[in-house]
Length: 346
Ligand SMILES: [Ca+2]
Image 1 (cartoon, helix red, strand yellow):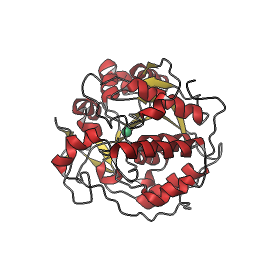
Image 2 (cartoon, helix red, strand yellow):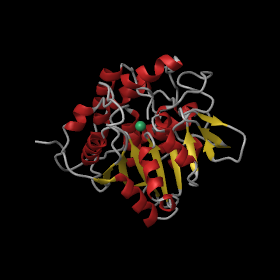
Image 3 (tube, protein in one colour):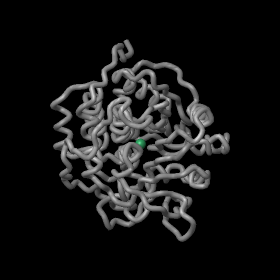
Image 4 (cartoon, helix red, strand yellow):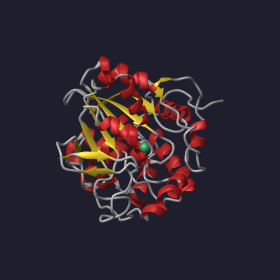
């Protein structure tokens, strides 16, 4: 998810928790030596992943998807849209995949939750860019998740960067099929640190709080969980790194700039916070966010507390911005993903 990037989220939570996103300048090198991209065929077999995303609200999902697509260590089997206007999210995903020449990656539409909540003006901050894409029909995300899990038993990492509604629905529909996922790596929860600087008490984090029941189903599903909560994901992109994207022009970096501008107009956040990129980076290299076992309980308001008991999640509790950016920045700046077709609705 995101931070409470949109006004909807702000009005819902900011007053309650009084957060202020840390705006500190991080000093990681743009091009580190710790994480270099392995060439095709040079490393181990690529990890099969599916990304479940609420792209279009906050800005971090487009970074997360871009890094996943630009990483030869990952084989993206598909992308599923989650939460809110899932059809429009799928249309946005189609456009990104078209622009980057990755139309081989199938897009499926998740459970719409438009009936459940009112969309605020900022909820789909990137709707203009999304609506310019070509409209078409998509398959059902829940069916796709279960088909893929059964087709590749214990091989797929599900990267969950949205409210967990699709995942809850998949568990309801076919719990044994869902257990065929190798693991879920999620951005979600808040164990000790809430929204804001270190020391801020735990928050009801958005991806969990929007659908706590689905989160509980996931934590009880029996699938190994790797959890990247607010404690480790409030990593500011910063003005300097935004500027570095301006110095090149690829379909992905151009899209990020326009989408960041759209998001800024809607949310007034100056620079992106890369919450959702942390689980992608972790999936590529676990040293970017080392985990420790915890027993996590999800309450009905969406708090995720560490309580005594048998561990049910591996949790990254500290951010590691230097390792994170040494992996992320070369992928953004050195990729040259280019599509060959027109991607806009005429
Ligand atoms: Ca998200």
